[in-house]
Length: 443
Length: 182
Image (cartoon, chains in turn blue, brown):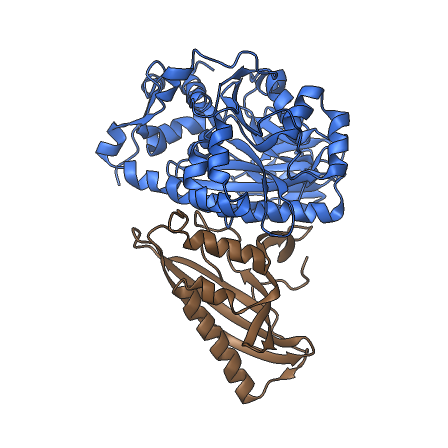
């Protein structure tokens, strides 16, 4: 194997042709581009690391990765959330091997260097005197991230001390839409168990870009399962409502797709009636109205966090049930991605409903999920299709944007730049425009 | 969370009593014939082996609270199915436009270590399974191994599968999808 090509910022920027709506296929297969992404994006943006409900008690931790750097997300004994590089400051040995746990302190297995849940050095296996005062232990704590911030129980971290506050990325516009999923009841959402994890054989950006607003793939790729799990004429219905449903550009590369039933009626398909009453309390009229007409909600928060909500039915005698899944697309290499998939539910939901909504999610959006199975095959094939010199020399086509980007849905009642329908490809391409800014060091 | 650690399904130890030779033979026939149906993707005939009140689960491995032991959890699972939901999955996989296993995989199921006990609920059967999945365009086999714990019941049509739990050895799935059954 040849060494990965080194790609510089100017070369990376040239890979996205903003005017033409084209992007080089190297974005999906090139190891040099991947290395630059790790450095330019994953050490500098806000990255999702977990949920507060995963670490409810002091000493609770989970292990995660930011890009390919392993981190420990822990609630310290003062109750504060902290994120540290999962590696001993002495010789680099990994501190935590487990996915989760509950500790008094972190002990490195190599020389017993021990750290509090606040990251501070506490002691070593051998007396400190052996180090003859030459080691500045007071400064050798676990390496912390630069900043941590939360929104609606979701925890984000960044290595970048100069990163603007999370509210600048996840701004008023983004939160207006995300509140419909994460803050729609007074109690908020809780996580249902640990995440499922599985590995896709394709580039990490394909998922988030798809989840930015690719409605049109659904009636085609998911046609058969849609008929079975949504309804007989689901394909035609989906295609029709996509013509009148918005993709919204949230800014900063993030976007949301809202598949809405036509008309004014609020059917709240797949929602529990007791919870709908609580939505009324937590959401404004416009948000409540959109949720009441929502068939599918799909969104991406740049760079690698997505969500899906949809009503599905796997019991012919029961009405459809909505699930909400939160998905992290963890980069492994240019052509391998590990998916982390959590299911969320309202804290106030009845016990049986929590189980129903979890099963609806497992059966549709998961490694064994009937919808994901279709996507996985199509996406994995891109790696094989474009890895060669010819494939890499060609473009990914987003040229639909040229027909739509100057014709926005100006009187859509929600904030953000709203596309007139789901066929415009504008939200997906905006993700790449943002990607270009980060790689070109404009961010 | 299940009390037993490790990927081996609890052999039906301590419960029920060993079955006689003809019953053991019938259990083996059932599992081997089932493996043939799964390998040949003859899923509609496979559905006929499933009891109407079937519970079919493939749990996730989870760490215990202290992060020291791996166990098999309750929720979420890889699969948590009823007969109805499996029917939908089967129709999806067999649909001519389905993309989940396009140019269908070659599948091989090796089923071994079969133990059977008679219990008041039916036959408690444990077995171990190795799935080898070969995609059309990839010479690398995808392997998945695990331990099954089944409950088989006699019906007019012969033995039926009333409960299955498959405990996978793999903590995460190194494959884009699970477009098959275990």
